[in-house]
Length: 88
View 1 (cartoon, rainbow, N blue to C red):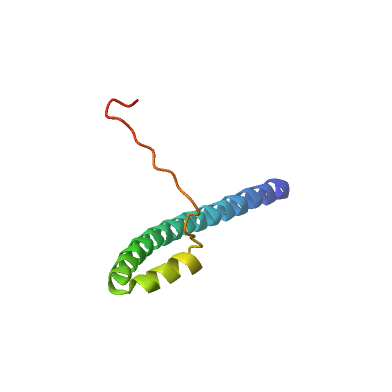
View 2: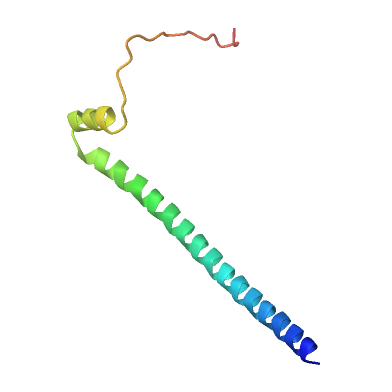
């Protein structure tokens, strides 16, 4: 009889532990989704602010940002390819 009581206790304990882990997982998933939504909102707001900033700063400052932040360079040479209307 004691053997079965202990077995029932272990099963109930494991079920309770599984339930707590499941609930914690659900909470973490919700938190992850909320953070993902917040991140996407902040990224879109950042893009909007960058556009507003670029509209207000001088061409020299834009050139500096392009070279320093985005590591852009002026092309050393380039080609112009003429494409006819029929695609040939």
